[in-house]
Every structure is written in structure tokens, then in C-alpha cells.
Image (cartoon, rainbow, N blue to C red):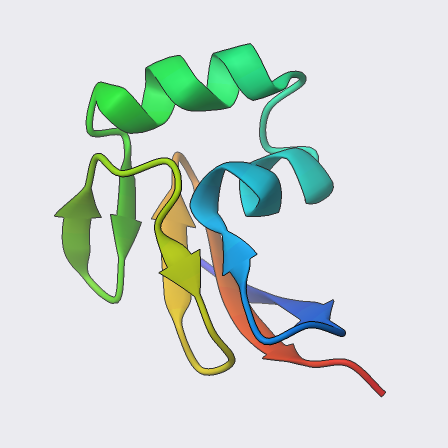
Length: 73
């Protein structure tokens, strides 16, 4: 599966916000449920914390998509 780069202009982005920003979910409510159900992994480990802080270099897998957080330019 190809990796999609998500550029951020802050120190971090939360897992829930990354899923919304990328269009992987339609709403924050959907992100909350899916993350709490263990459908996302961060750096290869299942993650159920929707507020998990993701920093540049972190990778997220969700469904059939993979994202890497990077610095904005």
C-alpha cells in the first residue's frame, strides 16, 4: 500500500484530526468510534487514543491507507 504524506505546520496533529484531514473519515464522531474500536495503528501498533499526538516521522495505518506525518513547507 502506498504511503500518503500529510504535512503539518504545527508541532503535532492528533490521530482523530489526521483521519478527518485526509478524508479517511467523514466526521470527528466517526473518527472517535473507529479509533476506539482499534481500527487504526500508529507506528505499527494498534492505537485506541483518538487524541494521540502524531509528530513528523510517525506513520498511521487505517483501513487500506497509510499516512506519514511530515513537516510543512
